[in-house]
Amino acid sequence: MKTNETVRYASSPKDVENYNTKRIREEFLINNLMEIDVINLTYSHFDRFVTGSAVPKNNSLKLETISALKAQNFLDRRELGIINIGGSGTVTVDGTEYKLDNKEALYVGQGNKSVVFTSASSSEPAKFYLNSTPANKAFPIK
Image (cartoon, rainbow, N blue to C red):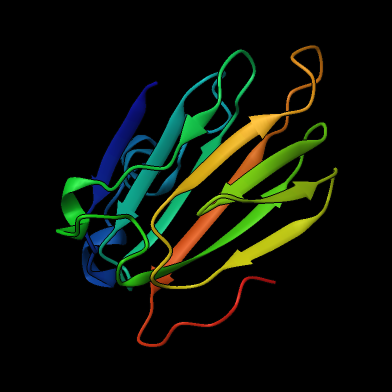
């Protein structure tokens, strides 16, 4: 399995005024989403927000922590929103499976240890779009 991590730093509005199109794209565009059999995560210092994707075509993909989180598990101090924009798939959270069809979403609260993404079919893989923010309280999976 492969997880790619990118870190973005906050930009001053005064600095952004002077950016050209190329620089704006470098600072704000996330262009590596939805790669097959890869989890891509971008950590932004704007509110410590993580945006990412998981597209499990040939293999299941496990969400692993990234260095910017300084945590043993990805959800130790975070919550996660998942939207499937591809074919049917399953998100397994700490051993419990949640089937997500196209345009369905799942909320996973703080403190869960294991999140695994799987597609129902390799010919039409699930495409999970991910957003994660810091959390101070655990809420149930919905």
